[in-house]
Length: 107
Image: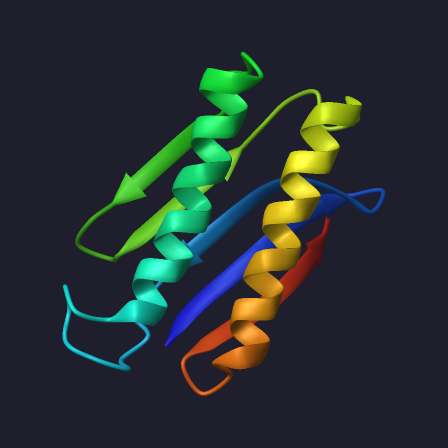
């Protein structure tokens, strides 16, 4: 199962951690894992390349884990992007609940 943890401070997303394999199909052919990966990559690209933020990222390929943290979470453009991706990840988990778990963590 893929687990998505969205970290929030004061209700605003400030980071996320995604780990595990959904198990819906073999690695490399799993559309659920691909969907989650694309959303996380989109968030990282949006924060770093489009908004000029410097998100901190940790990737552990052995554990199939990625963690992103970002500063300036209260900036409107950062909040809109991170909230949009968080909503898309939530909807992915809702659609594929047997394979993806979505958790919000208050900091």
